[in-house]
Length: 476
Image (cartoon, rainbow, N blue to C red; front, side):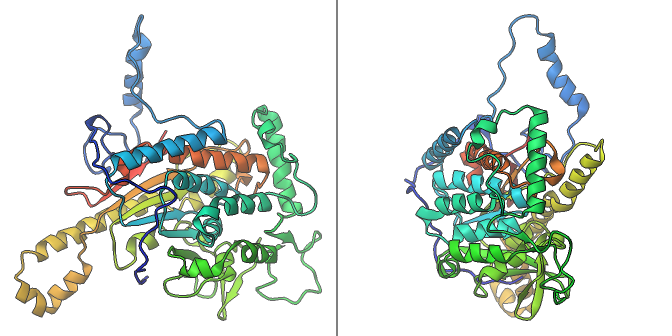
């Protein structure tokens, strides 16, 4: 989908970067594309050899006395908000010391996933504390809500706005929160007790709804006296979210504040995925809510005579939109996925329900990056061939002119984060908005982005023949 380039330069927040030359560290080279044969850490899309993994472990098991020290590994998951914040700030200082300059275009791509979206808030907090300011945010469903909260607030108030937003929608509609603000005390519950807590919170989300988000239309089924229509054909009323967005988001800033915003929704009539982009239109709360209008729970949202549902029905990640938009620019992408495409073989019906959601909503992100890598390779190849054609021929030949439009020498670096933690009972993890789970999602996001930022070389665009590289920041 064509889009215009914004003239506002990307903001860097909150700390300024002192340009400095990178100190190359051959021992920690950036991970290459899966197509290369460098013996670096592999993308999870490649099936690891079970035989090789056993062989790798066997020397350690046979060692009679002293064991060979293991190589340095990324930091483990932070145990508290303070630890996660310290890790992100330390990573930011290292990036500023070892990275000469960040790419001109920094995109944050947020997948849909309901209550799991608190993970994205934790990721953004890590970027914020490291001084990395995306100038393009694209989201679908809950990712669109987080996008609006970030882009619709001034830089120094974005974290407070995200905390307020998630504190609001993690509160049930009728009765007080189950944990009464003591979420940290519930972090070490045994598995059985935690399973009961998760089930209870999910049941409340179904029966009561969530404060500032949605509420049941009727507890005994659809009101027989209600006027039928697309705006009422749903189990829940989402008008509270309209009020929440209008209260927490400055849409003047969202549309003119220097951050490009793209949110995806499905046109109910045509079945096509469309993107609402503030470089082409003025966005308001309806566009954000349309991106998260998942049927049959939520009603379609009317915009200019058309009705829209959740963009996740077609594609749950806006990564393709970011990578294919014109004009193309050198871009560093933080892709934040809430669903893991890889998983265990289900053993129960509850496992089946969870695995079905994971496969459906992971949206084949790995396929998208692999396809875009090939496309970018051929665009670069076409650019190199055009350089061999005399300039006067390129100026007069229509085929050469068309080839010049398709050719591209831009470079892309995609840092891929996947939320891999599993809930105790995972099939309702996308609508379990309990505050204990929300806190865990948030902390996991902070910890995972700290692991990614621990590699300053990943912040640089690929060099040499490769024009497109991906880094799996959360690979086990």
